[in-house]
Length: 259
Length: 258
Image (cartoon, rainbow over all chains, first blue to last red; front, side):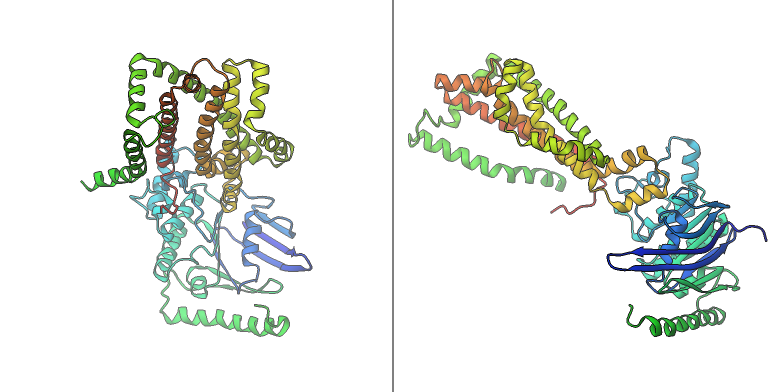
């Protein structure tokens, strides 16, 4: 196996508050290969969002190494697509203009690709709608299309479906897998939902809190498309849950009433 | 049909108070219960208005006033918006020039009028500059506020999308500030109009303010009222025009509409 697309070595990050220093991440080691779908899961406060923001270049000032395509990550850029928890669309732009953002729709190539992406995220007919006219799931699909238009080397998703209802969320998971299958975009998907992590990921990274450390990395050998009700899926889910219970024992023992 | 009701109703509501006021005034005046010299009846005021309109006197002076107000507004408001944009974008600039601007803002109009007349005479320059001084600040403050109120979450999006300074300013910060900028335009227009009255009342040989000054000295109170009505009506019309443009330009804005 050649060099990984994303290489994280000995990565640590701490935040300083008024009185004390909080260790958010501690000695993280992670390689992500091209085309992988890595889901990162852990209880709140485990640093999973911080890890994602470091990869995005939004948080700097870390110790250790984080490289994308062999180059150290020093700031944000379009090679690292980022999907926030909320869609964060520009409210004054229509759907197609939000996707294009700083690119001009008068460029036929941009226009064509925006059209393709609208098709891909299933928003046909909403090209001219404003964000206030969209549901949460639709708006989040626009933000995914906006990131994909820039052909990112890696797509980073920070609990993107956390605010959606169960049905919309299940639909969005299908949409995302469909995009992954068709485009082969490398994904890192942060979530606190075990079902979601198992359903989407080709590999699951489990983090534990205080300090944020990798508890386990588990390859998910279930074939796509996965059925959440199947016995194999439930078995796998139990494996992940078991890891969590070990985290609970550990962190309660050490940190006491931390949550 | 329902569309027409929707369009006409607010207009009717807005007319209730003026119509009641005018009717009472007319009745009291016609019965001799109020002084005709201090409060000429609305019908008397209208007669004077009509004759001034026919003679062309009104239009000549109104046009001069409108041109002054427009230039003053464009100059002051334009510079105000530009300054607000720059000060909003650059914190160093805020530290350097905002304190001085706030100081100038607090200088009363009447105080600088004396200086302006001294420097520029009672010609057009001093009037346009006085109006510009008034129109500058509402647009300056609101543009600045709008830029600074831009959502930090959208700022993060602009970073993730790889926007440099110019794209961040013109594709993110400036559109975010638009609701505030429109508020600034409306306030600036209002102040320009008020400043126009100050400038023309203090020393002028033409314009609506001059007509009012002249009429006051000749004891033609009804003409003073014509001037007041014109300030009120044109001020309201210009405000409605801006609001109409605002409604179209801010269609995307998802806010409470009452």
